[in-house]
Amino acid sequence: MDVLDSVVIGAGQAGLSASFHLRRLGLEHVVLDADTAPGGAWQHRWDSLTMHDVHGVADLPGLERAGGSATDRANLAVPAYFAGYERRFDLPVVRPVRVQRVEREGDLLVVRAGDRSWRTRTLVNATGTWTHPFWPHYPGMETFVGEQVHTARFPGGEHFRGVRTLVVGGGASAVQHLGELAPVTDTLWVTRRKPVWRTSEFTPEAGHDAVALVEARVREGLPPQSVVSVTGLMLREQEREAERLGAYADRRDPFERVEPDGVRWADGTFEPVGAIVWATGFRPAVAHLAPLRLRSEHGGIRLDGTTAVADPRVQLVGYGPSASTIGANRAGRAAALGVRRALREAPAPSPAP
Image (cartoon, rainbow, N blue to C red; front, top):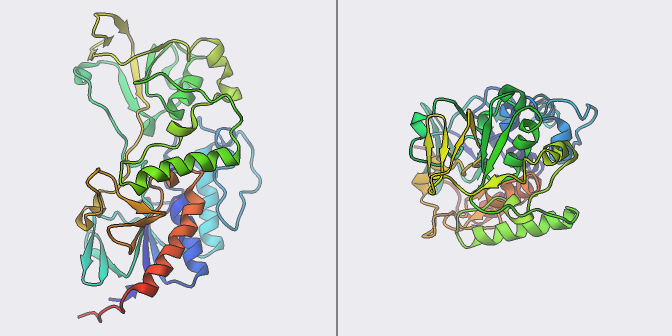
């Protein structure tokens, strides 16, 4: 079996960026993607999310996204761009490959997916978070007779027309969902803490500052927070109607339990709802890395830049600061340089038996 310079797991924005830079450095690698088609997590986002909502975040190194309209569906436009990007730079993407685990084998790493495996000197993990939605547990959730969906499967605001809908979560997705829901139905918003709204302009410098704060957490081996938890929340023009309707002003602290037709607080207050949207975020999809024992005593994976401190052969992109589009492209370049550095410092691989 041939030994690769690197294996990239995941073909989203961070994974493609890493592959682009690995190719430029002349490093032999493959990109293993669990999906059947290009597009990463974008192909799974809700139909009503348009490029007007996400403009500027899809550009990959070496090729700007050209043409199209602000009203184009993001789950079609971005995958089409990613597909063209893979073709343009002849990136070595193999799909569909769902990686189960990565193991150490002497000086090498072995990536296993069913009955297939790849031996490599380094690894770039770019699996992101989209495949690992976080569902909090509340007593009585299983008794609710209405519809419950997570952001990962949000069908768009129109789906809930006329159905009083509870949105749970304090991040950007919750704000977007309320922006779609409030004009078509009655809404209720629940967050664990009072939202912090950003009043100043979100400049590139502010974005880099936010990424730096998240990076500080992963350097300590703490579980990463989202970048929006640092930047604060902002309303866009398409959410002003929801603001006028009071969707963001009518916010409640967490309830105590879910009942068949609504939710109840500890003081006995009850609110009837017909649907619940859990905009409760995602967790890093890194279970396949468990055999490498990368986690620190604090529960997160300690990183130096994109390099795993516990094993410098491993780079993580789409994790912590690079889980947002603010940091993904920069992380791809950093990971490729980290791979080159690890290859220079590592001993020559043993021949295959």
